[in-house]
Length: 200
Image (cartoon, rainbow, N blue to C red; front, side):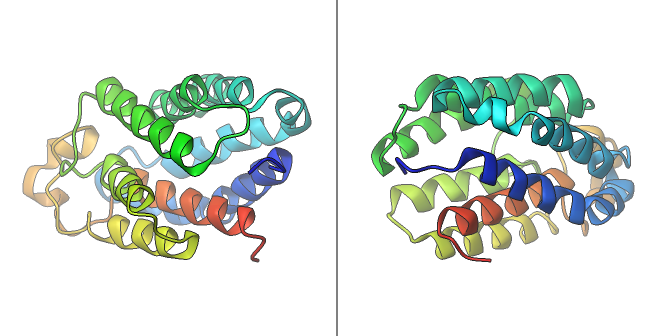
């Protein structure tokens, strides 16, 4: 990961969120505020606009700065959560991380997201994708396996009953819908993995 192209990663992530913004909005309209797609697109476009500036920083500082930008621009419930993920990752990761460091840093970042959202796995949130991805990192899974695990984890939120966030107000009516935050997390995981591995 020493030759990390952060600007390229940011561009790929922003492209993915933009391409799926409508899908994310539709998912969020079913059980949330209906603004997740637009909010995420706005935040990642703001990060894209300063991609070269972020890329010029050491990786830990870049991630913290990206997290701060997401908090400021995404808004809604997702801004603080996705921002916390990146900021906490930046606090824990080394400038040139190996898999061991990345795995440990990602674990700490997930803990920070759980604390920020006062949530845990099984409550139909982005944590239901983040934790399986962390488990896959610990188990030494390949990039493509991790991306598939993230996709499957997002799908697994469909039969769950929401216990956190706006969707929790719906009770049993939240069952049968994929969580928008879980879907956007899975999209980002796949994009990051495929960009790092040089796949289209």
